[in-house]
Image (cartoon, rainbow, N blue to C red; front, side, top):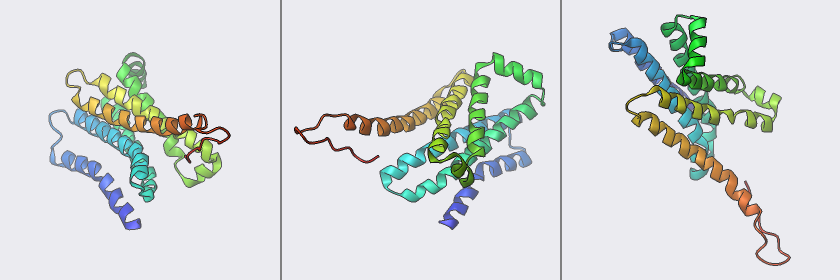
Amino acid sequence: MRWLKIVIFLACLGPLIRLAWKAYSGGLGANPIEFITHSTGDWTLIFLCVTLGVTPLRRLTKQYWLIRLRRMFGLFAFFYAALHFTTYIWLDKFFDLHEMIKDVSKRPFITAGFTAFLLLVPLAVTSSSGWIRRLGGKRWNLLHRLIYVSAIAAVIHYLWLVKADLTKPLRYAAVVGVLLGYRILAWSVPLIRSKKPALFPGKRAEVPEG
């Protein structure tokens, strides 16, 4: 498992290495800032989808070891989101706080993207085992459900950003929708079954384990 995690970790760094190579070799195109912004934004969404996909995949395949990878994928989602945000505040706005505040308040897609990033910050900070112990399992799980809101905000950010071809953001929206829909079903079906009346008088309806 240790070697597998190392291989996956290096693979997750692949997009950054590729981006660095393109920058070194002059392969960022006519608008390097736009290329970096779009690339880091895409990989943020990809890692958010991968992180959300771990739990359904683990349950459907019964490969319970997959849960050990979820934290890594979530941290890489934050890592690429941080690069995406840094590109915006550094290369695009040159740390002009006034311009950034104006952007957040007047441009809805910036507001959505900024919200998505801010929601990932507490998740990254509290991702360690120490924080799980400090917060307790229930409170930690409740806090980390913010990733659902962050993923939705990130998709909205992309949809509002793109003005012509919506194919790519709609694909992300579909993936996020399916992954969140699975969670809604996984939560609601046992709840509905638990409220069904007993099939026979005097016999309690059987409640499946969560």
